Amino acid sequence: MAMGFFSKDIHSMDDLFVHTMRDIYYAEKQITKALPEMMEKTTNPELKMNFEKHLGETQNHVRRLEEAFELYGIEAKGVDCPAIDGIIEETNEIAGEVDDPTVMDAALIAAAQAVEHYEITRYGTLIAWANELGRSDCAALFEQNLAEEKATDQKLTALAEDNVNRRAA
Image (cartoon, rainbow, N blue to C red):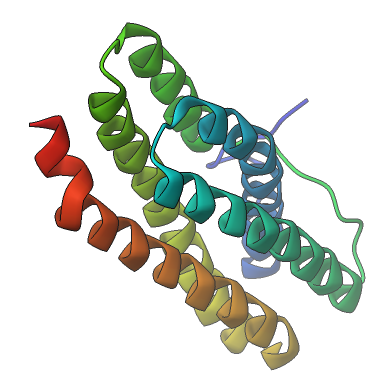
């Protein structure tokens, strides 16, 4: 049974830290499934390339998380993350309603950025908590993931502002 965010199974900072690692682990794994679908839906070669590159990075994020779980001495497993499921579900719903490929690209960028912003908040929190718990080893892994999430977000913003949004409008 999945535990909710304010679950009675969370008694300590350690429990909260582990739960949040499992939340982002689940999210990253869902993103590795969603990105290939997003690549298929875009007609913009630059956006497709961005999604492809980020798929590789996301697979590395999963590996770094597995390394953090190992360092922390716990099993690498996810817990349901309703936030990421909701963002992906919303993306699929909107994509199903868009006929114009240029509008589709704008919608895909917006969805991808919603995902990035969620991940940025999670990794920022995990870094702070890892440091509080004396786990700079885990924090260093999360910092690598966070830097890549922020870079992806900036690339998507640039792509949207430089041409995708204008074409869609």
